[in-house]
Image (cartoon, one colour):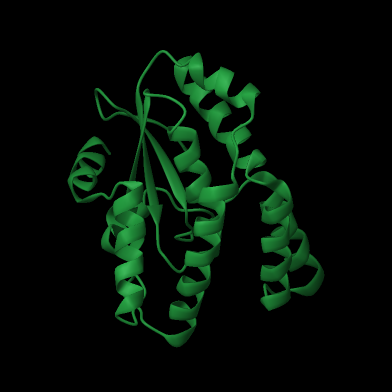
Length: 202
């Protein structure tokens, strides 16, 4: 596992580099990933707008800031993502805001389709679901936990919808985006900070 993590880090993006990479591909009519389609391009374009909005509007509550200030160790958020992923568009900007609150955290992003060996170590019910946060000890590059692809409330919404209708359709995706809008990143912050606190006690 350590070697997979260490091999992924040199090929990772900072948040700004990731955003710039996705934006440049969009200018060329492309999305990230091995598969190209009109749908993926359109999702990526929509996600660009969402992320721009979230960069401006997401606020970290004082209670979360206080808990981050208590961190003693240093960690890397190694995050597996893609530009077309709707969940990633809602969550990665929140992760960036968390990292911005303390010098003990660093955010590194890698693209799923270029890092399948790493992705396959962090499957969700057998699927390559993203975004996936891999919590890494900065000094040793040791795995300290993982999180994703979405907060518990969002996961419950999708599971309940699938149980009721048997499929995840466009309406389900719309309801999911509404959930993220109302939640304002708070569930993601709470769950990730709890992950960090658990890592502190390892």
